[in-house]
Each structure stands twice: as C-alpha cells, then as structure tokens.
Image (cartoon, rainbow, N blue to C red; front, side):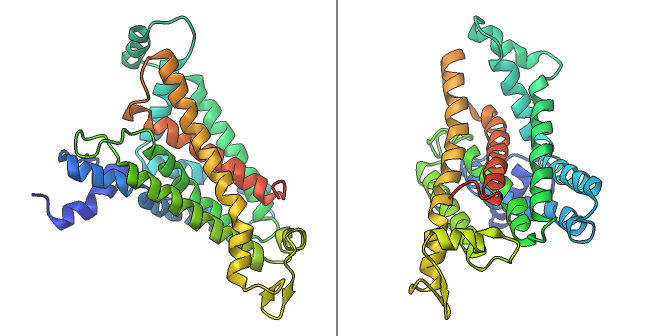
Length: 298
C-alpha cells in the first residue's frame, strides 16, 4: 500500500526530472500522478518564468535579450520534463510521416535512430511566438500578462495531454478517468477566463483591453461598478470568450493526433502520443495568447 508521501511525490517524479525519473508501477498511483499533471505544469511554468521575467523587467528595451529570454523559457520547460514531451513529439512525427506505409512499418520507425525535422520546426515556432509575446507585453510594461502567459502555457499543454490517455482508470497504468478530464477542462476554462477577465478589467493604460474591450462590451467604470454591474460579473463576461478559445485550440490538437493515428495506424493515439499532444497544445496556447495580446479577438 503506497504511503501518503509517495502519493504526494508521485506527480512530481512522474512529470519532471526532479526527485528522480521514477514512473509509479501501481496503477492507482500512476492514475493519480497523471491526474495531477496540470498542477505540475503550473509549477513548472512558474519556475521557468522566474529568469525570463527578471530579464523582461530590467532589460525590456534590449530586443536581443528578449529573444534570449524566450529561448531560456522554452529550454527550461523542456529541461524540466527531461525532454520527454519533445521526444514524444519527434517520435509521433516520424511514425505518422508519409503516405502509403503500412502500420507495422510505421511502428518500426520508433526503433530507428535519428529525429524528425518537425522537431526543429516546433522549437523555431515556439521561439518566434514567445519572442513576439515578450515584445508585445514586456516592451509596453504589461508584466502581468507575461506572467499569465509563462505560467499557463504548460498548464494548458498538460490538460490537453490527459485526453491522449484512455478513460479506463485502474485497468492499466496509462489511463485517466473521464471525470478527471472534464474537471481539468472546466477548471482551465474558469481559471484562464477569470484571470484574463480580471486583467482586462483592471489592466494598465498600455494594455489596450482596458480601453477597447470594456468600451466594445458596453462596460464602463462607474464608481467601482462596470456598466451598473458588479466587477465580478464584468470580469466573468469578459473572460467567457477566452475560455472557449483556449478550449477550442486544445481540442484541435487532440483531434489532429487522434485523426492521424486512426487513419495511419488504425488505432487512437497511445500514451506515447501524449508528448506530441502536450507540445502542440502549448504551441496553440501561445498563438491564442498572442492573438489576445494583440486585440485580434473580440
């Protein structure tokens, strides 16, 4: 019977390089470790954000350092996970690349050395998007928006990752119950929407959502209320569309890998595709954050 301490440490040992790369053998502990991976993602995002945020706060006028800070953040995210997600993405790309290849031949590619050029493309796109986010937020002093981006990117990626596991808790080590998936999906929608709505409502002068978004939504500050409604109502209202935007981006990544695997392998993605889902969901969340920061979604 696993101890309480083992249950507490299991998510960290499973999802990061800290405390040793140990994957729980007990199915219940394995399912518990998977279920808490979004929390681990939040912790990783917060730790990886410290150095880039320091650089953004004190060297925001130096574009070269902003590019370096973007690279540091991406490296720390991958390093903290032992590069497992990146390796999973690379393996998924090699397996699914090409047409007219039998499923057995595709699976044989996992045993072959080498890497897919898709990995370099993924890192390049992440670096470009993070650089644009740094320039859009840090350059104008929107540090709270930058904090949200850096913290929530791995959080959203790991929630999407849960949907690559079968919903059969307790029957096999790699499984996540449907209730857990629904819980994290709703939690992400509420938390992300509320935080962004809060930032839009009380953002700084350089954060144009305060002027444009409130005006277009019919909310105007009147003695502590917005348009005659309590601030919490305004915050939730402003965040609703963002909830569904992030939800759609996450589901699109899961649907892509499910569809490709079903078409070319004849079965839905196994847990080995979890890294690919997490990486592409992180990339999709960066795109959404960039669109939000540039006032392109109303």
